[in-house]
Length: 229
Image (cartoon, rainbow, N blue to C red):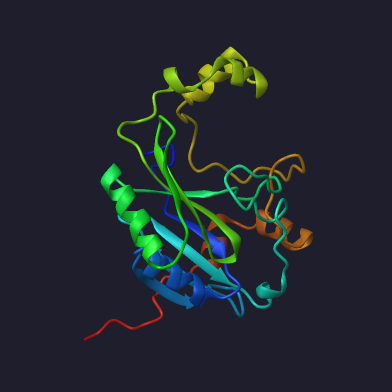
């Protein structure tokens, strides 16, 4: 039984125009569209999934009036991989390819659609190309020849800049396995912990509900298109 994530199932980006995003990530990036349906439990929402080769997915969400929310560089978006955005936002997204030849092929594919691409640039731990996507997305494609070696790439001087002690660094490099009970009951609400943005009373009701009730109320197991035959 895995006690840590074994990959990314999907990354979800908001779209002002979901068709524009689907066209970009399918035509320009080569990701096949595998799902497009009304977003579960979200009136007016549309949800798309495009497949990546490693059985993970790239997801696009369109909600009503999202195209009226302004993009603000330095706040909602970074604009490039060296610029800031607000804490908790995605600064940039890097897709993966297997080889240097694949990296150059991706660069050429993207450029063939009229999209400007910088690189490849060699970072030692990976080689990357950089470009923009719809709605001011900051995107990268990267490849590595080997797994990142922490002995070479965790800089003691930068640990100090980050306020991480040697003891903490050792713990972060080798997270302890979870050896506790299952199931674990829902913890009491603690305002110092991270929380999702629901109306407060509704959120507290959800936290008090049994897990089975949340599963039953929020599940949509059937695809929107009936099986053939």
